[in-house]
Image 1 (cartoon, rainbow, N blue to C red):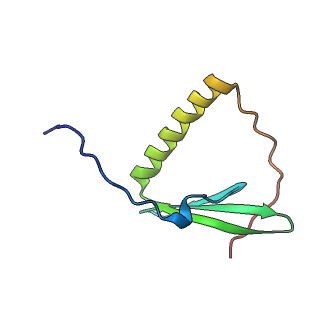
Image 2 (image 1 turned 60 degrees about the vertical axis):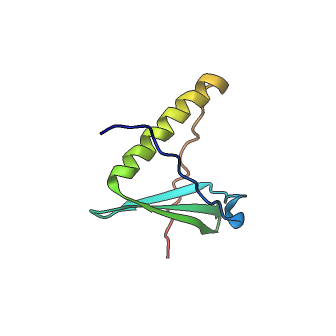
Length: 93
């Protein structure tokens, strides 16, 4: 039964308002979940700034939402140029 979507009130903790910066990301998965580690790399080292774990179904929705927003961004601001990979290997401990 499809009805009117319900509005959900979401709390936003003060410590998260500023967000975290990431200039790299590592993705891994198991059968049940995808793990995204967001990294701040400043060679010769780096740090994980956030880890997000989601279900396979949710990662598909994330990928779709990102693609839609990239398309909107590029329509408004022009193509996003992607630099060549650095070839650096990242090991998360």
